[in-house]
Length: 356
Ligand code: SF4
Image (cartoon, rainbow, N blue to C red):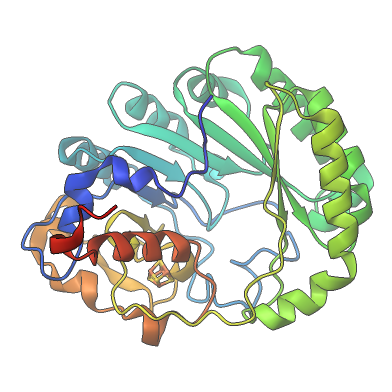
């Protein structure tokens, strides 16, 4: 299997890259869309960015919103016609609590758009699990607790839920198919000393990978780092030991646990990635990106409540340049490195390209 997390994937679409800058007259379809089908979730993770009052992400989210069934089918018709490459279902809530997910996934399975989902795994069962197993590209299950008791404390769920999620993952792998099943282990001070044993348990469950990521506790990079510094070295040691002892060709461990930049300042004035990977919210608003989802004042590109997605997208290009990252995005941005690569590429002097 090739690299799943390359920052250079966008350069496989040179026409799209060329269409991105403000000087271009051409608008091409997005490559990848994050769809938040519902904001409903039965788990109550204490760190959930969409529920925490003091985190910017999800600030204007209504936790009861869901995309109506007919609107979802219309969106899928549009993205297939437009040539969108991939869709990821994510929160807001948990996509597997969306009552039309089975129909939505079945519809996507008949067409050319690759699809994937994030989930807590509690509802990864039945027909919808079968559709994902045989037609989905990947699933990623977020976990924080290392056993039934800690899991129920993290999430405010009963102490049978951890066993349900583990059983669901094992059953999902038994379904066969090519869907890559990953786990995202969210690290905070409580589970830091359980990293190695948790990864070993996940290997025994049969998942394809474990990604280790920091729990985000503040909008400020410095405050996040103050929180993580006391556990940082311990976590890195546990992950390194796991990679050395447990990783194989069929079980990967991704270490994305890191301290954040102290400051999130950006020097560029337009955002390439919002034309490549944006968000359709359960409120039928289009947001620039995952880091500005449900931020009506700084992330909103428009609404598709009363119009088709394709009409919104191709209508005028001005909406892609109303957000100035140097002014409006002095917070965490998952696309920052990738934006810098695209801008560096586009700003190469054409008279000097030969001097590689
Ligand atoms: S946060 Fe990042 S991806 Fe989102 S609009 Fe700003 S620069 Fe673009």
